[in-house]
Image (cartoon, rainbow, N blue to C red; front, side, top):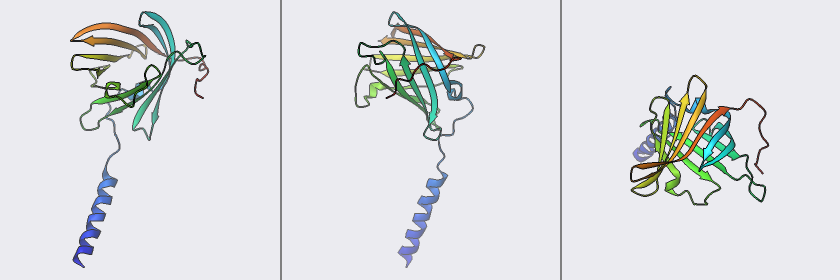
Length: 183
């Protein structure tokens, strides 16, 4: 009899503990709400002028933010020259942001090099992707409150020496969306 009572108490504890686990409640300093919406990315990537359409949306019950980026430039087969789906999250305990970057430039089974981590500093959110112990990539979003736009800086890092890879701006889209590249 005692083991049944203990088991029932244990089951109740597990069920109520699971119910009390909070979802990823983001504190007010979260930058995610400022990213929600449709944007036009323009600027220079790898020395070439480019324009992309970018959409940020909450997914999975506002647990994660998804970015879908599609270049307007096309490959020879008619597909977007560049396309990415990125998931952003935030650890509610440590405040650290993380993102998982998936794009059509490389196919990897969620390689750790595709995961960046960062912390908000003012209106800036840098994500650092470590490729090796001395090389990586720094992807920094910088928000402008006066223009409600984002500067997006992308730099290669080799032993602490940064080289510019891209300087682009995200501006809210005011016209209808470009045709979606989704199947």
